[in-house]
Image 1 (tube, rainbow, N blue to C red):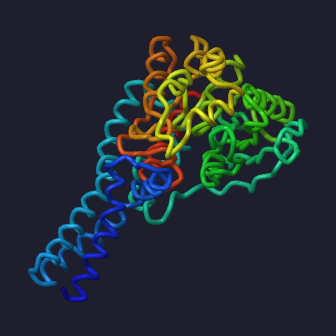
Image 2: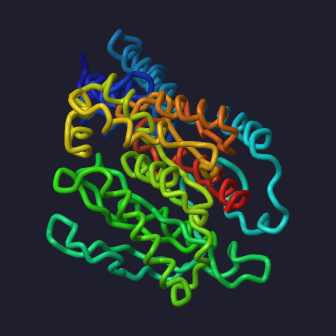
Image 3: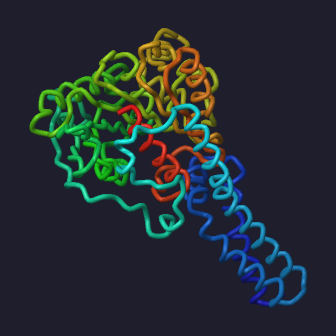
Length: 399
């Protein structure tokens, strides 16, 4: 075999093997992490793979190794394009479903929306543009010595950019409280730095909070921390330029569970909406059917968070479960979840959505049939673009 043909075959394998992560579930934690950029940005390799396929098949001879390399390049091109193809179809369906479920937007905030469509092609290359917003300031919101290093609980506060949803003659902006993920035992504020200035650019104040982490602090400590953050923000609403009667909670993964639990149990009329990315909403279900321990030992992290085993203390699972807590007074809820999520089963969203429907709570689920857990780490990827489009419209409708 010629050296050039061998190199092309090796290159074809190196491109083809990662592309399998677009359709096959990852077996270990490393492959799950790799699957995020593969699914959300792999389409950028489609044209190079097609070029290499054509070049190899028609320019590198007719031997079996050359044909094999060309077909591998072609297969990789198709697989890398698959998530984006699903995203295009999904976005179209979701727009229709959102209009049917939520109704038309109020006329006043329509000009404030930053996303003209669920998918904007230039943003894949240039990044998602954001209106300029003031730099954040860090504030101590609770003096508990609750963090592992003994420090106070803090938040990063982003003032709303001018011209946002402080509408109807109001000068005070509504505030989104952002709650990070990390399996309840890790993570920190500023986890995804792109989302906060994007929300501030849309005209919302943003408070990205720390909370106490397991195993040093157990449920319901993080929910209590959300309460303290709300109390602090309300007390300082005047100086921060926020409306003390308009808050939304937004969390991802474990932070999504905390956001949902706080929204459903605090009974605070100032909480106007809740947004949760791939949240473990049914804790009883999550413990009874754990995921692949080579990716995440879900029972271990739940035991740490709850301060005991669900087998020995089933009341802990029920008490921490948003599915158990939600009632007819719950705020409007937006759920965002990838169907092949390998860390938090998509069934969590299915179960909560079913109960929200039964209770008549306004809600919408952004179901992404290709996306995995953490898809929004790729901020300009198709999953994140679609999510931002519906977050913006959901908040404009209810917040």
